[in-house]
Image 1 (cartoon, rainbow, N blue to C red):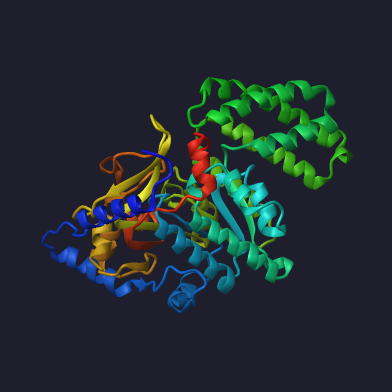
Image 2: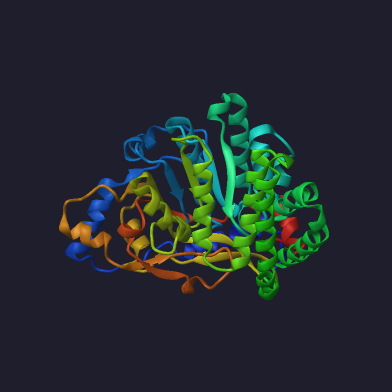
Length: 438
């Protein structure tokens, strides 16, 4: 399949998928099923539009629901669903304008998201370049770019205290970090420049190959990274004037992220710790959005969202995004390293999405914290049932269903009946043609 998908072919693929999956599997509803569907339908908050810039009348109920929340996790069951990116864009506008949120954090590298922060705050660089710099092609879309454009325009119109900051919280792209750390080494530890440069060149080569990197090379770099971190910490105390406090903080954190990446495990724990670091370095009361896959935002053991729940309790709100049927963009890394359209049939009978689809609303928000005080509904929320979790890496959709207890993993859900693929930017298409990034 060629990287550039002709518009006509793409529309045909989507149309065929929609026709093939337009009917959800049916089964006779038990009394318990009927009660759950009735509860969903009664408590659902219909979302009227996906169009950014619209009035927030339909989101008015969210003000009371989120009034004591400091961090909102915006999940998604697939990275390549256009409706998810558009819905989250509109939700983010609402959280910023109506509820005072000012920090956006993303499932993207802590290091290589720094140019994006410079862009949305100060207009430094250009949007197309800094978006591609994130290194995650799933975000290099027209939908996500529209939200970045809105951030930049919004920041031009508000005072400093209300401006949006943009941060990555992930580990695996560190070109900015390597450049800044090496520059600091030249200033405070010149005898280590040669060895640091050699180490960073080796890491850059493996990063270029990621996700097909040589993990033995990465693991072998850990002792050298640890030694460099220890020496820089010593220099900070011995000769603090060589860098100012903000420079020391930045350099040592960037090196800490490199060390975490080289551990090759516990990614979610490190994502959470990077976010907690940002929370601690912002003024008290600053409100954050955490945009990532459902698997990261859910308040479930092993996920980043679980660490946030343990630390902040109900001040963290995990919102899972799910869809019933349709198509979404993914990427095949072997053998073609190309874009792929994944077609997902209608949700299987008895699955979470099947129940949500029974509400017969195309798009809605459902707050799961609203205690039903009905034992049957509470039991339904705690019952394990299948839910879809599409990856950015292309895979057979029949293999992407897992069990979840929605009421224990999430505080709310946003449901979309029909998914269509995101639209890669021209930069993204060229990146994939060169078989680069993820």
